Image (cartoon, rainbow, N blue to C red; front, side):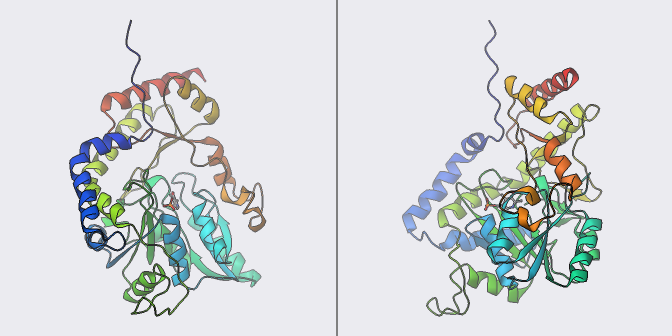
Length: 378
Ligand SMILES: *Cc1c(COP(=O)(O)O)cnc(C)c1O
């Protein structure tokens, strides 16, 4: 009898912890020893390291990626009567943030190859909002889906001065022409949710900007809109600080982050080589590197493929099964089925394969073989 093959993890956070245990345990113990659980020295140290890593003038940590988006929009005074442009294919939080502030999301279709916001459709939707005259075009929120930066250069060209907030929850560590995420938009928001490329052991997030004035407002908004004294409230804010223990975890993980990025890149190349003749593999725009939060393929018979892979012990995930404009809670703001054809088609076809930096080549090869056999039988 052969032993059964070991189960394959979609993302193996335990393997990462086993690798970093001594360092991370010591860093957490240090926080327990000094007791500054809120805005302790690790938070300050992490912000300096995030600035050094990204090249952004300011890194402002917050409680999660959704709050990062919300706080950025608050800093720009987004509210009722404002149009906020965002892609149909994204995680819920992108649409939720403007809606919580009373603004109106304007759903934009995505590029069929990159899966990020389509600059041509964005231009059309900005023009339509201007012509209607009911809403003020206020912010554009491109999303770096699966870790690949949006086409910020093309977006800036059609933006016509509308400020850009990058939703980089999935792309921390990615680059465009050598510039890191954090430098690609006026404000960039990221998430440290455990499964993101740089994840903590709970919720966490950060904002990046080169603008001193905006950074000061972001820092104030995360602590209830405090002024120079904490009981002097100068604006309506929120409570959204990164826990010191989470900052300690992130400092530990940052020590290996670049090595992990290289491993993700190598695995993505291995998947490409093994699958490109059979399947639609992810696009690699010239000058860009992805953070490979996900390795996402396309197939017409996606659901049957996912089911067969599950039966063969390969976990997969669908990011995402339903576009924003067809979500029951957001539908009133969209134009219904057929209005974002690329996003709608991708929701039926995308499938993310296991991807994490601790995956062995042999495991990737097993996944590739199983996908190949399964696809040939569909
Ligand atoms: C994960 C994610 C968020 C939200 O981040 P949280 O830290 O979970 O709040 C926002 N946008 C996108 C595209 C995401 O993937």
